[in-house]
Image (cartoon, rainbow, N blue to C red; front, side, top):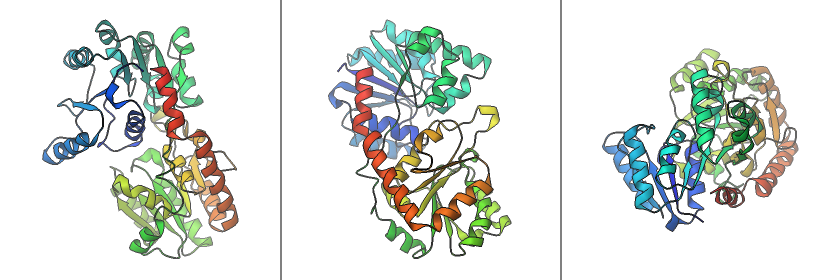
Length: 380
């Protein structure tokens, strides 16, 4: 394999699904032939220490820019080109095509022979805005391959590209570490610590932002509690929407049945999935399609843990569910549809078992990191 330079803003210890995607792919490339150029997670001593500790543990070289947000400025582009030449890299992987893919012509001139740019949900939003659409077209024209997560994002992004660039698109989806996310991952201990032993638990693991649909889950809880009075909603994650969600739980009268954990260390996430009987994240598309779910790796992590899932219909989220087999897709933003599916699942242990087992098998068959990382190696 060529020696590769990854250029990205989305890299741990910054939390998030894209960050986990890139890191897991990077770990499955040859560490002797890999250099990562990334932004700094956050300013201040705490962020610097966390970033330095993380980078020291990696088997490959990580070079951090001092800024918390890399942009395709002349300075950042020169540094990326310098790293390419210094380390003898001939392949480049942009962890997110927009906007860093605009560096592609300069990196080609610096010696890059193969350039791959990966798209997520936000590039589908770019494809709808006139100026951003033109920039996305430039990125497509100057890279060898633009990757996509699923059919929804492919169709949106392809509409902004030239026909030749659209024809070069290839699917590159994130995977799941089935050895980390599995049934028996420690959920009983989490339940005991939170005082949830013996109660039906709906778990949602995600950033707390409006698109993800935690508010829909809270609005669904009165209907769920009417059928299952001991049920509890376990909301795992942190984010700017947290205060609003707590206020909504109080206003809806279900505060006693909703537990917020705040941000949880990555190592503890499998156990928090395992604390649930059902996983639900009824995500919805917002801002006229500019704020959309690219895929939803959390559904696959839940499936790997053996849980049935209830997903919203935003963007590519349905690609992470076999509707009717590993769970159900509901209309994003509909408390009624969400509640109906949750009531059914909580009341039918055999259905939960069957869907959970099918989800686990599907992850093992289709979504393992070793299978998907092979696709990236071939593209590079």
